Image 1 (cartoon, rainbow, N blue to C red):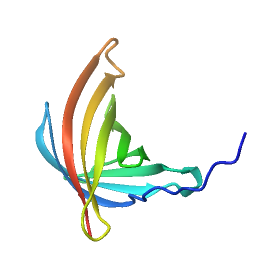
Image 2: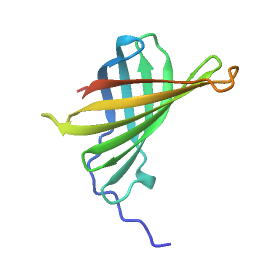
Image 3: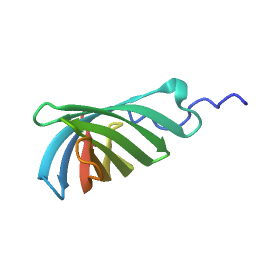
Image 4: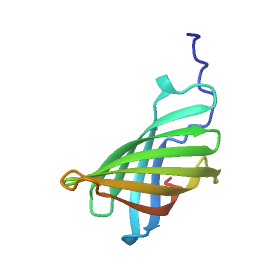
Length: 132
């Protein structure tokens, strides 16, 4: 296997304040923190560890990958006996002072461990701005 190229893309690491809305709960706020995984990023591809904190202090983790200004995100959401995976796509836009914004459009697939065949979904979007 050939050695990977050094990461030459934009580092989007930072803390983002987000306002979101989805089909089930309506409007909400959260904070998303991205931290680049430099050893696994190469060329224009950036790989990130992701932490989400909701307005009621619940934490979730996930990962993101960027290719230039395009981003894909995956978050694992556990709540009691339910497990949901949130998968999103976003486009990053530069702001002043080395900051960025993005709108994440996502779909969540929820599976309940105590109900065989139970699979419900949810969808929404989040508008996020990097904090100073």
